[in-house]
Length: 296
Image (cartoon, rainbow, N blue to C red; front, side, top):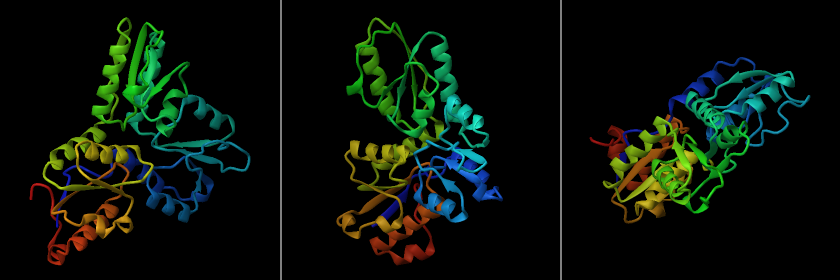
């Protein structure tokens, strides 16, 4: 079995920057991480091992008296209201919010200030989306075109969760326009460039393979979207967090498998999965001499 890697995959700059900040913290037991730093189980275990206080995705209570004096805002960001709540509780903040997430916040607030009702294309309840809508008066969150309704507002301003796919965003935008023909609809594309590059790399690879392995956290939106894109193109896709989740039986009859990874997946995790795939394919010689890459 041949293994071909996507030419763009793995950590984005926002996640890499957040990890660098974490690595530079000398007293982890004094820091509460406000949510999951990244949606990556390997990283979460390492942070717990270093002594950080982990809130998980339940961010409530992070300014209680029993918490640490320092709170770290994750790359997914928080609303200004939540930031003020934490500071009012006497907490010092370390902010690792991705600048591309900050751009969505600014754009959404600007649209609302100009009289648009803001529609966020994204996953309802996702930590990034919760941060975006937290400072808006009456936001609408839409996950699919089937959810789009005829809204009473004369002006609708659309933004996107940074990890949404261009295809899904395009379909939802078209549905909003079609079902609100009398409304002025303004769309601002806030899908981040790393997400787009990962998706476009997958598009370049997918016709060359029989199936895909997508590596990343099971609660990582951009990783799930990569797997969904594969299945939408008729390619079997296996979404795994680590090499331990690979089932050799799944690869029976597959001659060429593609490999990609979400924006919060560590390089060493990708390498471990790749080596396991080569082992499953029975090509021990290539395992020793090097890894096959796209375009090689």
